[in-house]
Length: 444
Ligand code: ATP
Image (cartoon, rainbow, N blue to C red):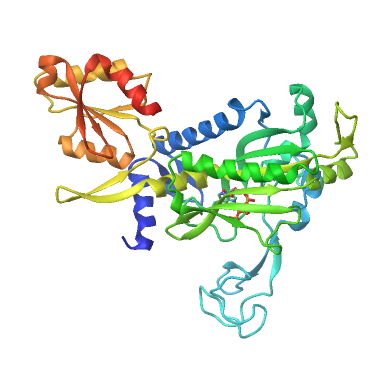
């Protein structure tokens, strides 16, 4: 498969099967904003549920939080986002396009007469680089004045930091402990693109782990290893995953150490999760800016300190894209090309398709009854439209791991065939054993 076309195929499959639609498509779409259709919504929900379970339910030292998107504007002064969350940009005075100053397509030096606009090709129309803040601004209340400016949060982390003492006290946790949150974040990205990889509105799954200074490096290593393992447990191919360690000049101002987890997309190796040792930077800054003490009093030693923070920050949309890209396959079956999404059964939006072999001889009635017995227990799709081959193909593309078919033999001995999406093997199972059978296969 040619590398560039794979993404196009995935984008078109995503639309065709109801994974991802372009936002406001009937109005021509809104740049780099995407909506999740019925199957995409389930995929993302399955990913978020699995993350939440591994962070919050399976551990006793992590609590959940759901902070608001809008926060006091001083939060973003303290965090460094008002002054530092910027990209240098240049504008073309001719065609009005805007580019990152380091855009490889620009020839010459922006601001000087030799510089050439990469879109309209005009020379000397590019402005000198200017800093452009990536935060979305809006106004709170009826007056559009400076005092009423609020920002759409560019990361969920700050909601956790400003609440850490509240959570600590309410949950009676002790350090080390963590706070997990899933929520929307917004960045006015200049070069969004690659489908849902870089968008202006996205969802983050972040866990901030509060530790005693001095114990931060051991916890950093622990979380780095755990997070990589978690992705492999989702069934993501290990040879398409790697760490990228930030070099000193890549490190963010707040970080002592940082590793990205990268996936090999058709457009190259790219980050989809970051693990950062943020030291006491954030809490110290909030302490300074708010005037409120954010120290921890160790009940065992009566020692006071500002905790260090180990952050794991994962994009839910990027992870969903990783899952789709990793699952996408084309193969020859009996002389025909089959497109299949080999999603881990736990992630698959639909777990089972139910089909009558033909639309007669009482088969639809039996299949409908089987479907209604299973509905509510497993996510299923009933389909009696078109040839059985086409119905299998549609579910293969949707990533559905199992297909139940009611055929002539069902009417005689109450057994059905269960087809496995990946091996294409069919087993005969007693209809009244289906739920137990599917549960065992799905939890395997
Ligand atoms: P990048 O270098 O790709 O812009 P970043 O280093 O700014 O990312 P972080 O601030 O560490 O990213 O955000 C953590 C995670 O949030 C990323 O790994 C990614 O999964 C997700 N994320 C960040 N920006 C976007 C975006 N514009 N669209 C989709 N997901 C995003």
